Image 1 (cartoon, protein in one colour):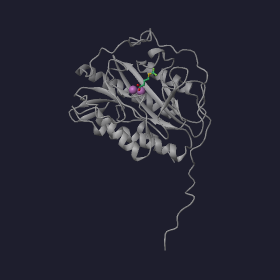
Image 2 (cartoon, rainbow, N blue to C red; image 1 turned 90 degrees about the vertical axis):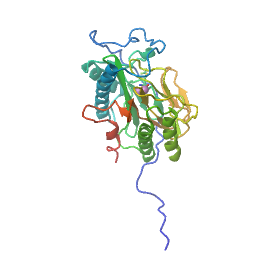
Image 3 (cartoon, helix red, strand yellow; image 1 turned 60 degrees about the horizontal axis):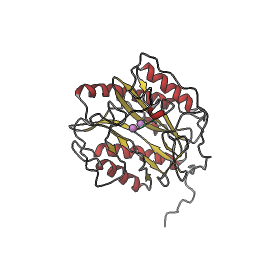
Image 4 (cartoon, rainbow, N blue to C red; image 1 turned 45 degrees about the horizontal axis):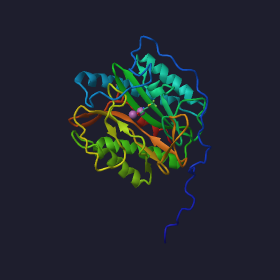
Length: 314
Ligand code: MF3
Ligand code: CO
Ligand code: CO
């Protein structure tokens, strides 16, 4: 006897047609105490052209391990705040205060004029969402992107968190996006080409019928927030730049349920999917070593917010 086909699967929520995310109100600019060391763009907003090397000195590497761990700690704490009802501005307040308490400067603040201390990107927002008065709703997904500047270097890391009970398609999007980051980290080798990153990510996305955002990419990071090194998350055979030992860089894939084409809000920052479908992102700061890429954005205890996201899913 043939097995009966299950018509209605177990009670799994379908992708909700929640109202699109809209801009809320911004709180007043947050202050950083005078004694905190600021990145060069903190006053003018202009980072200028990249002049730094893409590889780090031994002293810079020591600083990046510490700053990366502190950034990872802040992302963990930020993730613990996520629940229906909290506003993205409240998340910004906590990230700002934890950054200053850690003796650092929240890198997003006034970077090219960005008005807040962290990026919060909900549902169809791909990246660079500005924290505001919008409360999180049950069923949302939110990427929190923390960057800390301390001891002359930046640590840049993000995770997408689930808010309350999230539909199955969105949970899978989040899961596959995290897997794609980890596959890319495993794929890179010392002296190997940058294209290995996009190849690993795109292959995994295609397998799960998800889109890969092309308009925003990973980057070299170190004494500068963004160095000249570019890290696309899609495959292009021409991306032959070698990842030499000592290179510090991010991998931060953004995958989409629908078309990965982006549309900018008129605030000049917020990037949404043009078709309004959901998108997720995870990011680590990495250091190329003799044995491959080392994750710099994990806590001193080896913890990472990434590992908690899906443990929380039901
Ligand atoms: N953290 C983001 C990245 O991963 C950059 C944010 S720039 C900001 O590169 F100005 F929006 F904060
Ligand atoms: Co980054
Ligand atoms: Co980031």
